[in-house]
Length: 325
Ligand code: 3HC
Image (tube, rainbow, N blue to C red; front, side):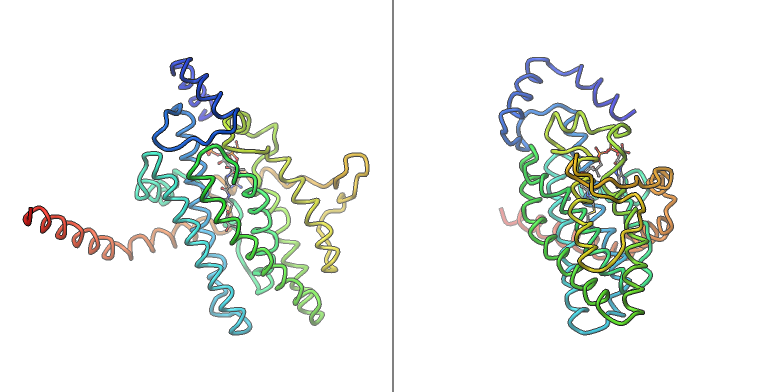
């Protein structure tokens, strides 16, 4: 429906302008906010960047669940820094989206009333401390796999935001791997917890890359516009190829009997996630979907007095300036 809408809007645009725009994209030029762009390009970016920003913000919730129960002061400080980084990523991304003519408040309202999505992964619970390792290793690992290519995306503000985000995400991934390493080489109970976390997060991590290419609605147009640089399946394959040897190194087993190196394709064969579960989760029926939106709505309502205060202060300051002129 959305892809059709984007396409039909594209056909309404001036063909000469569209051709010139595509030539700029093909030549690897960056598109900046004041440049002419097709409405479909603008809408797709607002959808993708907005969803990405929401994911960074909602993604703080499953990790903050463990802040008060981190096993040492050092682990707590590291986790706290990581969660703060995610808030910063959300802010860069909201700013990038705002350059396209949508306000942060509008985007937030669309998240809060369920009109906009956030990444499926954050609708899953974090049940033990080992999940902090699995989230860093697998979830941030999958996020980097998707975001490194996005540093070359065609829209300037998004591309520049990604450069900063990726630097921090690679630290997040390493701290997650470090937690997993400690757990996997610790007591038998710690190793059991690490394996259990891997068992629960493996398929949801694979789902982060989106539906398989044959079912992806937006990929072909988004790739033509270099909003996406790779297909969902390409990145999922790269993630499995990178992660399977890491699991071996940790002495953990990926919960997939079909995982096997395939010499011919120079990559692993692996099982697809359960796509019906994925569709259920993105419709808002994940195990924690209701809790996540409730928490974000509460934060928004609780913060109303801060926003009102700041706005009143800004209005007063502007009125004083006008009076002085
Ligand atoms: N979670 C939720 N929704 C998803 C999804 C996922 N993992 N994967 C796909 N979808 C949705 C799409 O948004 C689209 O729905 P819509 O039309 O209602 O918007 C539908 O499923 C069809 O999928 P497509 O493949 O056609 O969608 P896209 O072309 O947008 O591809 C994507 C999906 C690969 C996630 C792409 O949007 C993308 O690369 N986004 C930027 C990266 C991003 O959002 N990352 C969030 C990860 S979490 C994170 O970064 C936090 C960090 O701290 C760990």
